[in-house]
Image (cartoon, rainbow, N blue to C red; front, side):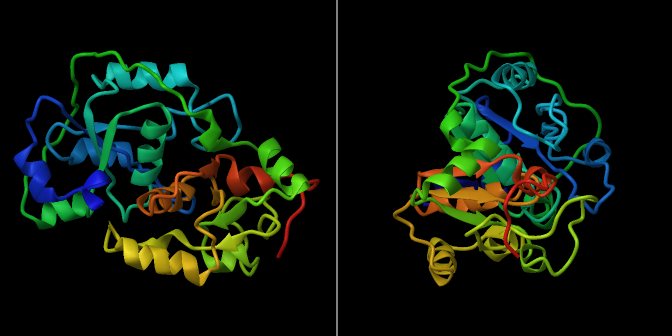
Length: 279
C-alpha cells in the first residue's frame, strides 16, 4: 500500500538519475513562521531537486494564501520545470510533512499519473547519509497535459450548499485542537475563532510520526475514534488549505476516494462574519 504513495531515501538514492524521475522540494512555512524556504533550497537540496513554490504556483488573483492555481498556471509552471503528466514526481519538504501532501494533492488534481512523497523529507535523506547540492537547478522544458478534477476542490459556496442541504457529507478540520475549539486566537490576524458547523477535529500531526505517515491500521483507528464514517463523503479543511491535504492523502491511503478539500478553509471562512460557525 505505502509504495503507491511514498518512497524511501534508499529507493530515491538508487533511482536519483532515472530519466523518468523528477524531484521537487515543496517546502512552505507555517503561518507563524518567517522562513524563506526558497533560499534554504538554494543553500541545500537533494541533487536535481527543483523548488515547487506553493505560494507562487497559485491563484494570485485571490486574496488568500496558496490557493490552487488555475490549470493553465500549473501547466506552464511544471512544463517549464521539465515535468510531464507521465513523469514519476517525487515530492519532499524540509519540515515534518507539513506541505508535501499539499503538493501531492495539487499534482494529482491536475492529472499527474504517478506522484510519491519522500518519507522523512530532507532530514530523512541527510540522516541516511546521502548527498545534497546547492544552487539553481533547471531541466529542459516539457509538456504537461492537464486532466483537471475540479470536483475534488470545494469552494465556500459548495460548503454552504452542503450545510443547507443536509447532505451526508462529513467535515474534518486538520487544525490543532485548541484552534478548532476556539481556545486560542488564529495565527492569521482578523479571523474569527471556531470551526465549520458539524465539523470534527483530527489535527494533521496525528497522522504523522517523525516525518512519515503512520500505518494504514493506525490511521484507520484515528478516524474511527472520531466517529468518521469511512463509507460516506468527506470534506477536509484547515487554516488555509495546506494541512487539509495531509488528511486527504491519509484518507486516500485508506481507499476513501470521495474526499473534497475546502481550499479557502478557515482563512476564508473565518474572515466572513456572515458565515455560520461553531465553537
